[in-house]
Image (cartoon, rainbow, N blue to C red):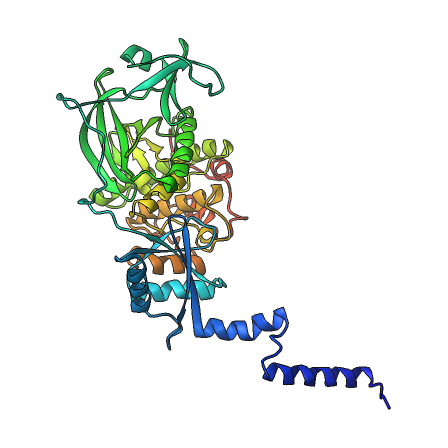
Length: 466
């Protein structure tokens, strides 16, 4: 005889049966149950690490130790077996542009802590092979006997669109170089001629001057334009051309050509880009005063009036860029450049993302995370216009105190504090209230509540006479 159980009794019978089947390993549980049960247990026992080298993605699972992290030697040994050499490792947040070096057990522990505290399921790492100065990758750019380099370009009629070039190639004269704008088509340099064009020009015949600095993206040097008797600056990056870099190169070409058309009193002028098989050279206006970072390193913190003037001028440049829908993505004191008359301009705008991708391929990632906004560190949003405002707030703190917040900490630890602690925007009490308020506004932790450059310019009480 079949007995019909009531609702509650039927549920008890079913639950009991499921428990028995689970014990026998025949039922894996619901999706929710797995995530909360077995999934949590596995997460506690081991950590999944996803690693990207160029276009190759590798996934491994390493056991967690008694401290809840993973052993540095296990990870380092695995990479040496796979790549037959020691690899550079950089923590990143899935879908973001952040890259912070992981160099030892302590920094690996902090990266794992970032993963756990931010709710990520995996640790994402970007790998690169370090390219030393003795690397086989060398420049194919060579000067003539007088030390002069010459760029070969194609001249085409000026239009508002980028036409397919049909005119014959020739060496540019100084006159034609000074009368047109430069752009890239199909990987070649072209000059768009216009009798009325006032666009800046790319140097054609030039000599290399002193090196101003060297960083993750290559070296920055002065160049003397032989034809126009002027000094310009170029960023020189040596690459190993392959399929991986081709897409990034094309994007960089397109971006720099577009940026060379932008002119504003608060922006360092792009002049153009030259790309040959192993070399990228981005030419820009030369700012003889150097960077604000150089100024801080040499003389310490800035006077209140000077920091205020620089901040206002940078916000003017950011307002223009942001209203053109361009995010800088790398605002910091090293990218704020000075003329000889007490004014500043924003440098390296609009190309940071592509340069970072290329630097990854050549094994020289890095830079400082201290200027990153919390939402960028946590992967909530890609570095954008509101993140530029945060970075300028950090730069203002640096100008007024002589040091960037968390400067004393390793990069990965600074990243953790930016993500989860309150903003370090305290200024000396003697700083006027208007600048105190401006700093707090720019370093508002919620990007949705952070004001725009235009709003800051309009609402701040500026104590300036000019």
